[in-house]
Length: 366
Image (cartoon, rainbow, N blue to C red; front, side):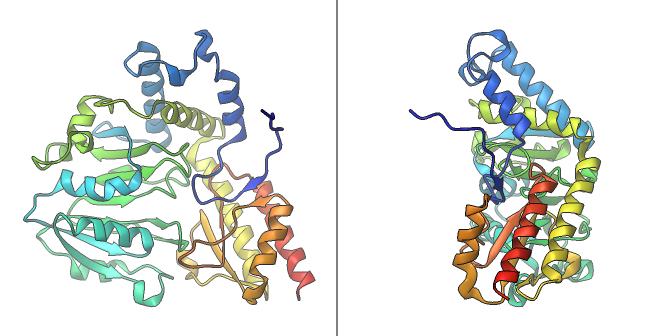
């Protein structure tokens, strides 16, 4: 078996995504002998006192980072954010009720499709016909809400389309949000939401874990036929250990939270994230070769799609970028082009190297 070197490429993958090098180095150092116990943390019982301490510390650090109020439960679940498309419905509604949805991209569209299996969906706004290049206004959303709707669901940041809300929708009902690709990227007011959910594999940790932050007064509304492992109330009562959780992903996410606190918290990382995205958008906008179709007010700070004016250069762009150590820049298969995902763990220097490569590539193909 060959032993890999410590070379680290610039990883712009949309997810599973880059993790902080310091976190991976610590995990490597602790892999075989965690906490001086002679075993790996992934080899111990989730019911044991040492792992319960790991879990409690991770939750407390997340609460600190996001300033999560005490009247919210924090769940560390499995199944990915896609399982939450049905979980939120089964936990917050009954079969004869309706819920409001906003469609601004592929992931919110998937949430709509899944929700329709369980209840009546009130699609209050969609930007599909306009190519998913912007978000609807608050007035457009509010005009179509119904008093029968039990919650309003939206996706603050669409990973594939690179479209982000520049405001938090208001409604006289619980707000449910898929924060998978933007959680911990910049500060939010948790009390604005009834439910926040997020797959871990972008800004939190490795795949296999899903965060759910839910207001406690919503924990007792689940349908009778809601599967136990999907039931927020039961999971909250069991400290997210109704069954065996994704222990190693939980542990690694806890290390990411500690790393983020060391960086100065969400406020500090948000400044870097905005600097990274502004640098990349500036390079795109000042170019004759590259373009981004998203409305400026709705450009994501995490996922930056861009297109080459001459699409015949796509393959060569990807080949040369990979040779340079700039990885996973190919756009999603549904939209084509390129995409750079610049999550928290992607350093500013990586974006600088990408911008330099893009400039040099354009000069060669002007």
